[in-house]
Length: 183
Image (tube, rainbow, N blue to C red; front, side):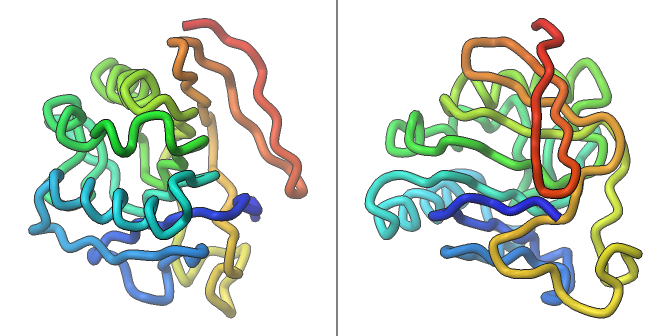
């Protein structure tokens, strides 16, 4: 498990069972019919409740292909980042955890993650590989993920930085590290 610093906001897709939702200080369930400007408004409202800054934004939704991105609301991808990364959001979130399958595994997905970091001013954590996050996950098969935690990332995971750089992200036993890998 990865402990998420608080205050944090979890955006859980309505595609997932409640038992598979992450729970932070602030939480929202996002319907697949909610447009991205409305998703941004949910983030802005929770930012205001948290005093204007979040240590983390946890996005718990399916990865998406064509366009590559995250199946949050009607779809968070390169074409909708301008609607999501509003002035109220920019520079007010330290880290965005994309708990989604294979977000960074294509050229377009990689570029989406890089652009999300550049436009939001946050470090963006995203995986190259499929993720196993569900009630049957062997790490926590008998219970919901504990509050203020997310499941470990499976496989190759990157940290995209607001300066355009990228590092390999790894967590073990609750300790997370990043190793420089370039742009």
